[in-house]
Length: 247
Length: 94
Image 1 (cartoon, rainbow over the protein chains, first blue to last red):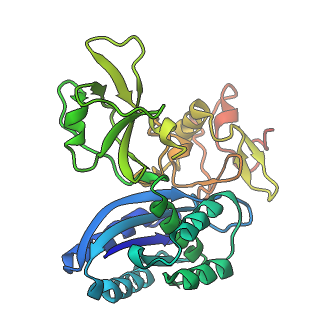
Image 2 (spheres, one colour):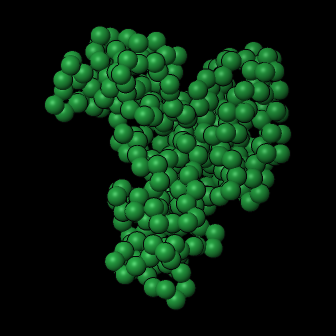
């Protein structure tokens, strides 16, 4: 079965990031033989004076293919891990959703999109989780992180939100690679221009220092922009971090 | 480069898109610490936008540096607006 596992509000100004905790849970899921984890995505939620958060208000989510019989073990492990590893003063929340069992998946997506636009409250999150048959639990502090955890799961399910955690290392010749070679990397599904056109396999891309992908149409997409004054057949280059900020 | 927000907290006056300004301020800040990779958004590695002590606000960010420090050696009248303020040094800027 395919699950979404999302956590939020596990850190403070001095601690490890929520992304690191997500990565450790994803790794443990595999180490325990429960299944196989995917990449981790970061999802930006609303920044608003009425919302308590450490510094970013972002949630971290991954998907995993697991044996159905392992679901409870995964939930129990993640819950215990958050209780033990979340930073003092944080308000950690955990969401685990079995995608095939979701009664109304579109409602989970809608909740995620709502949490990017407006202030939502814990009661609403718990009510929706119960209605959809989603695990949602708090593991310290005020437990406010459940809102972001549920929202992050919805945004990941949408397939069109967030940046992937980490950056990719791709072998190149003089910092340039063909699209086919880039897509041979397991972390890249597609190379696409900011305008939305998918690049052909032979096109050449100049890779920046930090190659990062974003989640679009359920794929890990490397976004590129045209090279000004292109020469040597190199027509594209990867986007700057600043350009990826809105994803 | 700072003004006081509604809660009396120092907020970066450049908003969320002043990439050069955020880099200049960070260059002079003794408390800069890079945030985790996934939360960094500026191409300049040393930028307030990449600092773990920045807290995003609706229109900008506030600086949560513990015990803000100022590099007095670098602080001259010419660029003092870009230094992190300390008590009695200079007040808020609009």
